[in-house]
Image (tube, rainbow, N blue to C red; front, side):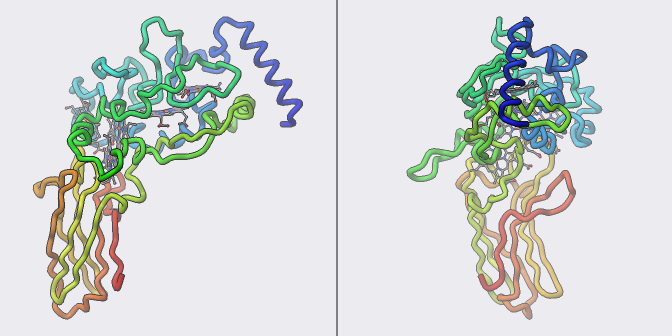
Length: 325
Ligand code: HEC
Ligand code: HEC
Ligand code: HEC
Ligand code: HEC
Ligand code: HEC
């Protein structure tokens, strides 16, 4: 779109927005109003939507593991955190009334629960830059940069985080700093089929924001010390948990961390933590000896720290130690 055309379109939109009592109803589908789905948010927040969709949060209710463990969601005490109504700083997390299949969805984390707030008021950490208010906004809300938000459901990780010591001379990192990678972008992003989103994107400004991946950080080696001593017939491995929570963490589901060694023609593995081996607390170090055949040259040993990925049912590498490194 040319700049002039954009200006015109924006002016028309502004006029429209001012002339109808609730501007948002033009942009949210009538059927889902006043309880929009994530797909409704996708119209103007497509990037965030795609990140969220690929995260465990969007599967928190439908996942086979949850359905099985909760007897197909009949254990209603489980549904609160897995299909939550909008959360806030203090009230208990309760199950929502509609579209449970979206799990931990946009409205769970962003819809204001303030009594008397206008319908569809969204809370968030960003600075307002757009001249149009599509939905009312509570901007620069500190709750969104705090561990307490995550801890509303991740009670266990929050209590581990609170008990952990800060690294010398530095503040402890927050959940968001490790699990929501930073990105410079605009709050809005364009949708292929909803052309009007381009107008909002054109009006917004870039800011330092965070992706909604809620995944295991790619650079896990930053917080996991991993030293290997190679000797004839064995490798001695030491793992140092510098994360502010257990390795592995989590109260539900089976998480396991193991050490794996490979050499030309063979391999050996041993569980380091998780399951009956117990977790490594924040700051804890654990040592483990892996037996390898006497004939293997220490320089031919390739040693990795791995975690079990439940979703894809395979072992993924957290840290590795190359031969000769
Ligand atoms: C588990 C809670 C959670 C869920 C679910 C969630 N968000 Fe967020 N959202 C956050 C947090 C926390 C931040 C702030 C991150 C930061 O910048 O520190 C945020 C930031 C944002 C922002 C500000 C801009 C940006 O890119 O960071 C927008 C817009 C947003 N979310 C929209 C959405 C939409 C749309 C969905 C659903 C597709 C969604 N969120 C799902 C917690 C959540
Ligand atoms: C028609 C477009 C449109 C739709 C649909 C839409 N938004 Fe927004 N949203 C915006 C615009 C525009 C802003 C303000 C951006 C700015 O000021 O830079 C915004 C801002 C936000 C913010 C940022 C608040 C802050 O300051 O940190 C959040 C959170 C948010 N929206 C969540 C949602 C959620 C959740 C949905 C779905 C229920 C949704 N939005 C649907 C256009 C939309
Ligand atoms: C409203 C409840 C709720 C909030 C708030 C919440 N989570 Fe979650 N989170 C869950 C549930 C439930 C799961 C389990 C989803 C699954 O894997 O089935 C989960 C899973 C995760 C996972 C593992 C993902 C995976 O693929 O297994 C990470 C990492 C995570 N959350 C980080 C965060 C962070 C960081 C925040 C704060 C920004 C946060 N969560 C806020 C409920 C929540
Ligand atoms: C310093 C970085 C860092 C901080 C801060 C951090 N984590 Fe983690 N977290 C990690 C790493 C690395 C892993 C992967 C290792 C593992 O599986 O234990 C992980 C694993 C997880 C998992 C398991 C994911 C899975 O799929 O198995 C959850 C859930 C989680 N973190 C939640 C949180 C919450 C909630 C907070 C805040 C209270 C938090 N984390 C703070 C680095 C961090
Ligand atoms: C206080 C909030 C809360 C409640 C209540 C809750 N969960 Fe969860 N659940 C979580 C969080 C957070 C995670 C992700 C981190 C973890 O694994 O500890 C999770 C993860 C899970 C997982 C792992 C998903 C996977 O893919 O491995 C299963 C299974 C599960 N919960 C089942 C249940 C069952 C069954 C109940 C009821 C007895 C329940 N949950 C009640 C917060 C909760």
